[in-house]
Length: 184
Image (cartoon, rainbow, N blue to C red; front, side, top):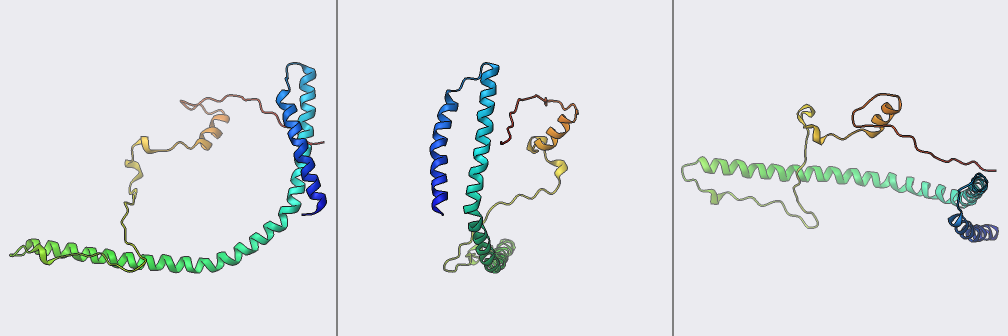
C-alpha cells in the first residue's frame, strides 16, 4: 500500500469519527435543518464513493491473485473430492450389503428348526481412520400428501403479486419512506 493511500485512509478515518458524532447530534425538525442534513448526506455519499475507489485500488490485485490461486487449487481438489465421494459410496454400499446379509441370515435362522440366532452375528466393517454411521434421510415421494403446515411461503412471489395489486388474504402492502442520495 502506498504512502498516499495510507494517508488518505487515516484522513477518512479521522473525518469519519467527526461526521458520525455530528450526525448523531443532528435534529431534523425544520425545512432548513432537513436541507442541511440532506447536504451532509450527499457529502457522505461522495466520501464513501472516494473510499470505495481507494479500497478497490488496493483490493483489486489481491482479488485477482486470490481468484487465480482458488482456480488452481479448486481444479486439483475437485479430483480428490470426486475420488473421496466415489470411495465413500462404495464403502457404504459394501456396509449396506453386509447388513442386508445379516438380516437375511437372521430371518433364515428364525424360520429354521433350531432357531439358533446365536450363529448369526453382524459386525460393521472396520478400518483405521474410517467410521461407519447411519443417518435418517427424508425422501418426499408425494408432495400432494404433505400437510400445509410444512409448506414455506415464497415471500418474493407473494410480494411481487401483492405489489402488482393482487389481493392475498393475510398480506397487506404498506408504504415506507426511503431516502436515496447521490454524490456530488
